[in-house]
Image (tube, rainbow, N blue to C red; front, side, top):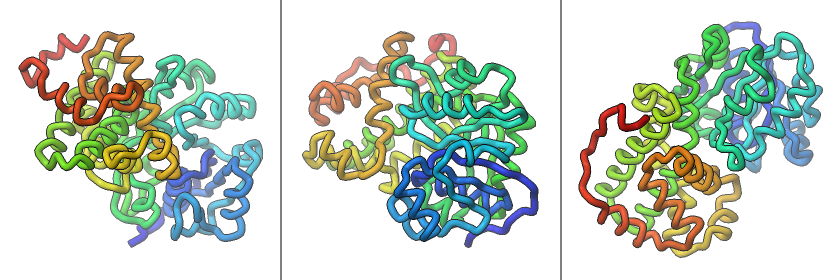
Length: 346
């Protein structure tokens, strides 16, 4: 099952050829778009050009003929309508700055990058606004989608969020096939907060399962993680219903419950006795939740938002707290109501 193409005329440059950037290139091409995939790593670019496959990050997924591979950013974005950034959060500002220098009238910018910027606590849309101004149409793609399954053409769905409804609609149509749906949203903040926090909770789920705590513990962590995600999002101006959708609950459940999640696998490695450095090395790709835990922790402290699970995961990752002690700390907290009034979140 690979999904039927929908005839269209659309061109897009995808900057970042990791597993997710490669999968998105395949999906946009499958839908009929002309795709320029920019791999800044010379060896990855050469492999993609010669073998038409990303053997390091997405083995077994062949690039369609309408995907062109290039190493040069200027070449990638020269003759396309849309630019999609798919890089880790720590590289987002630098990538966006490089694109700004190549600005071409009429081009639009989107991203599938997830996470708060560590130094500033800004979300990607805030960085984009700072660097590009308000006149450039922007959007974020997020949701419960493993790269390997999207590349294989398995039925999947995500959210495209933008304050520009026409841009969101265009992107959702440009990526759609008979096996892929993209829903639109105007809640950019909510979609980005979901993406920024879910990987941290996935580490917690990996720790829990790795310690053998069972299904009860896992679902409690997921459910209360959703509450914390929502609490932080509302504080930042998000809409509560966003967290009941694909970019909130959907992405959270996916990353917390399936071992295709590198963040979950990282947590399990820690539970098995690996230190953070060894666990990160064993994954072989960026584990966003490791860096995200520190960034979300800083934002929560700055905003004075109570995120008990995030706090304990941060303590495990950066302060040497044992995972079992973290669970004990969470279970010994004073009883409280499950649902707090919305006004308490502001």
